[in-house]
Image 1: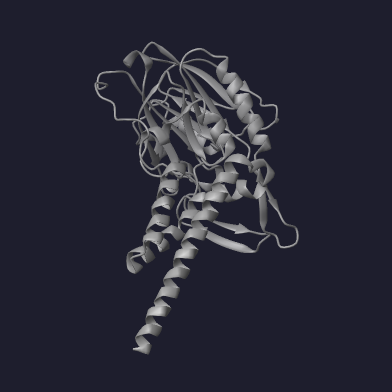
Image 2: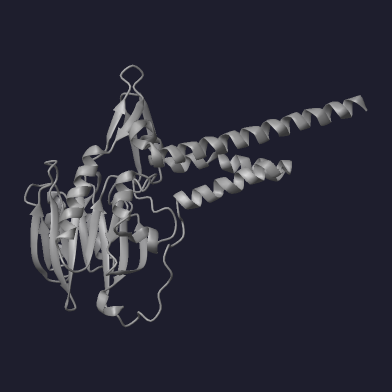
Length: 351
């Protein structure tokens, strides 16, 4: 009898400990997400942490397993709240409804694709592109070899092609006529941005193709580990892009490698004004980078294989004049260290 009481006491103590840890972890996640919304600039480490905030939710799987095994209402509650927080911060379902009566309306199939420069084979990139039912493609890091291949072997599918004069690999392949275009130089003196005006079945659409700067990761010089992330220069580019987009008339698409996660404040700046094609029309997390890569972090002495994309950095943003119908991430083997993002829009005349 004493032995049974001892086991019962031990089980009670273990349950209490697990419940306490579940609540403490839930509280820590709520605190991190709350500080990220209110005090991100004061705590640079939050910017780095929340870039990969999806991994903060992995322990909730263990909490759910314990709740099921231990029949704990407290842990069930922590698991449920954690699940709600995850779905709010990382939506995995389309945010807009599926549209009806658009079968006969004018549609625009677009893709943004960082083709990886030296991380890819030009022939594989070309094959990946030509198999897709696309009207236009926004390019980043298109190498000279890729550009030559596109010009010579994709000219029938995309007769209108533009590439930046400074050799950054930014370009646009279009099935439709490009009425006019201009190259924009951000105040950060970084990569050029392309603004092109295309005519689609009588409708004029503004296309902006960008490849933003990387956020600056700060390291501790003693231990070589990251201590924070600065989005300052990215924010300058975003502001410049928004001002240029406001100057044009007609529907706008902002496409490219934005080098920002969907948890960043620079993302919020854009998504407050424009729709996010994948979030509104796609299923899942939409991760696009890195694709089939391994990274060696010299300062920390770490070689980390990353078999699956871990973050969203490639986007298609659109204004309310366009209607998103569908969006998908396309990962092509050997074609790039990025996955491509593809989207289908309905033009204003079809609404």
